[in-house]
Length: 198
Length: 230
View 1: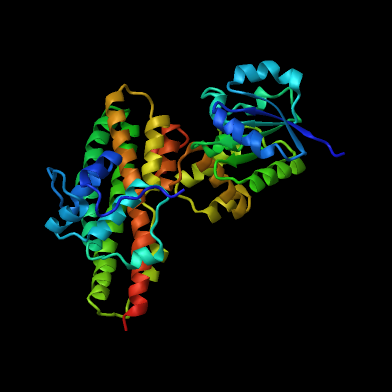
View 2: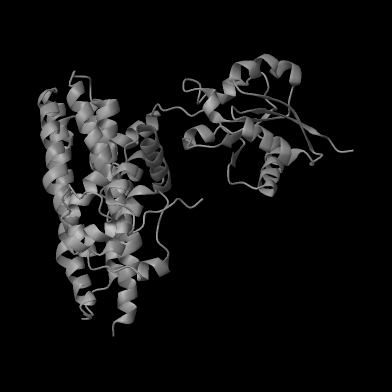
């Protein structure tokens, strides 16, 4: 007999919990062990239950810990975490999960997301840093001075492709996309001074 | 899930209580407040607005993922499209951007001079970009569409050219909000910052919907006119 994966659910809506239990009831690959309506209760029992998979509503991470999924479950590195999403959740939060189950997913979709998560298994990347790297700083300064990608590439001895990827990371980290906005950012952070701006 | 969309038989006041942001949009159709219990259809008749187009815009402004399908689009009377877009341009420039500029100047004057000057220059460059963007639409694109609507076909221009150069005027606004929230050093202008930020959020939402109307309604509509005018 093939392995039965042990699931626990963290969701405050009993309607949803009942729905998920019902959907997985006749699927012999999964065994729903227990469900919790808040994180504290779950953490208390987690060590004893040792689930393979946890389905959790990211809202219940709480605002302060919304990006800390990984450290929250650091003692259970092999456990898969799937988000159970019933309202808008920032993409950055969802990125921490192995998969995302939405309210419109049907039974087959949910089962295939579970299978896919079990197959790929690997934990997603760590929560990313918002500090600019030294190289990103160099690129930002050049952009703020009004240089084109080609000039920047030549000056820093990197490919245009790399310049573009640095620029994407700079915009993601700072939240600023336009060249004029990046110039303001560089000035405010004393990376360049007014005389550098034409 | 399809939301329950507004219809021409809805009461106009119900639309406003469902989506408060429509308060900012409705005057651009020339509609004055105090319309009592009148339905959308009744109010539109008074102001000679196309009710189908009015409802289309209200739905786009209210439901994030709503866009009309092709059939609904072709069934819409578009005579109010260009006047609405023109009125919106006017409103963005003369009211919204002017408002924002005046608060921003107060904030800038309270900053260290080099930061303040940078902020002012950023905003005036942005405003110029918006002026150029609107200018092109008003002098080139809208007259072309009016000709098409009147059944005249000129070969000099196609909407495809507009589509390929239609520039983004939302990025800088987002950048400005991030600068004001995260990066401009604290100078105790909290009240002004809050006020300018809430205006920026409103304007940015509004411009997003405006671009959506141009890209997903105006362009397909004009493509249809181009195919069907000989």
